[in-house]
Image (cartoon, rainbow, N blue to C red; front, top):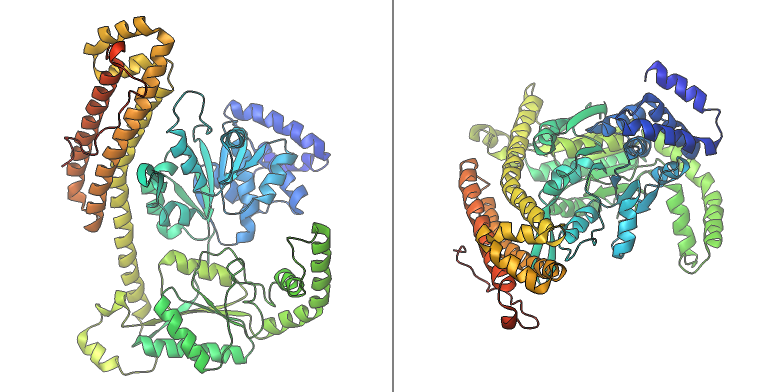
Length: 613
């Protein structure tokens, strides 16, 4: 950081806690004038140090600033995420337009730092009532799982009268595990159902693109920089990338490959090294389980809450199927987890015991286990530390997650075979016949280069598919935004009658004025809103079903780029037909003589309409 930051950090270090919030008020005033200064970053860093015990490292500072400025920061060490995210969130909150922190935990560091600095923080959950949700979104910082935010957005766009919305317009979001949320989960469709009919939906990608300011953090994203740019207009900042200094070994067949891996696991187990084996395929996991059992190896079954809690114990063999876990491997094992298990085994129930009683029992167990844990930890370190064996080569990003898991405390080796689906078609027939019976590793100066080139080609195919899917999804997303804007004007706007005339056509103006004179302006406004939300919602549900069916058909043929203009044209035609039908229904209901109207006068439309083919 610059000299201004260093000077501010030195001055802030001597202030009492209560004065930090006063300085935060001054920084808010600057931010509202468009200036987030070095002093603001220094202030948040000081608060992080006081809450967390240590001030932000240079890596954490750079990552936090990158996120605040609208980038995805690549940081291999999970331990650096919380301070970096906290810096980005607090800096973003200075603008007083709300920050949405999308994370799978309760963000304890961020919460504590915000409160110390005088920022309000609320946490979303699925059981909240509307008023609770409204308070949560009015806070400076709203914390919740990534899926909760778009669902609240969908429900807000189905409100039936003004003043019922709970969400402030999406402005700024900070996303942890950004690669999984923004890329791997980009096609995820979030749906609202009523009597088993889909009445509203949005893809995660379409929702996330609504934010004016978006940033995040992930273990490995450099290889997907182009995807972040194409889908969200985001840059990638390689703050502390994973080091790629591990090699792979190739065998002729899957059978030979897995036997070689099991032999290596047995060798490391005998040397008391902790062994972590990763495999994505259920078939491979099942085969490895049998091979390891044949060699008498005790295989740990990962606990869903802490899948790697025992993975660092000497000689432990763990099979892992998911690289996205934020759990870390602690050499010697996770002492806190071991202490909790010992207390549970004693019969003490954390649900019935008081908090103090439970914590006292855990602390006692921890003290009892500490000598053995120290011995186990030293044994694992002396044996060479953790060894990770990859049973399959993966895409660049998941492999980087494994490299980050190993870090500097062990070794990583991937095992491949020439009969894997993504390789077998590239092996010359003659070479295959010569090598298929070999049990020895296959070597050669161009092997690594060739395999990496083939993998890049496979990844580009996946990325190309995702880009095309995004282009098709954008067609539906744009129409959804138009519908939501029209619905807001009709149901929540200040002049619903004018919005209704825009939909029904100017030729209905005299009729609208006449009915408004008969019924009174307020009654007419209420009737317009009532008719509008029923007509728009029912017609959009039908139109959306048709658009989604077309989208699903294109998905089956990998979203051909040349078909996009035809899809856009047909989608526009269907939307215009929906508008005409909505306007006709509203005109029939609103402009009918008062004597012709009955209680409960709105009738749901038929399931099929002329534009449906």
